[in-house]
Image (cartoon, rainbow, N blue to C red; front, side, top):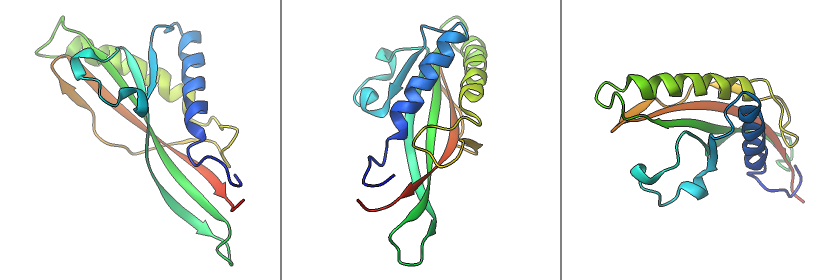
Length: 150
């Protein structure tokens, strides 16, 4: 990835999720980026959805002259659902989120984006959340890229 966009994996993740979710019978799931979620209030957000969010990076290795590096990036695919049927207990939202999370994991685990140096790995991520009928399940994936100056 010479002189390229550091976040070039994002559109590939979005396209992969849209295609795989539609093929699995979930064409109405919104796949959104952090930029699209910026100022959206929770009660106004589109659901069901998968939010693709850059979580951070680490340097796995730098070559001897520091002119190239192997970088690991962590990307979250946060499944977001809302179901008011069992608002207090959250059973319906959890069930829907759990099924959708399984499809998301299947779509991304072991898949290699074109700009990545190796396939995505499922890694530990932040905990799930539930508020006012909304269920959130963040799945974390590690990608690896090679950086070189242009």
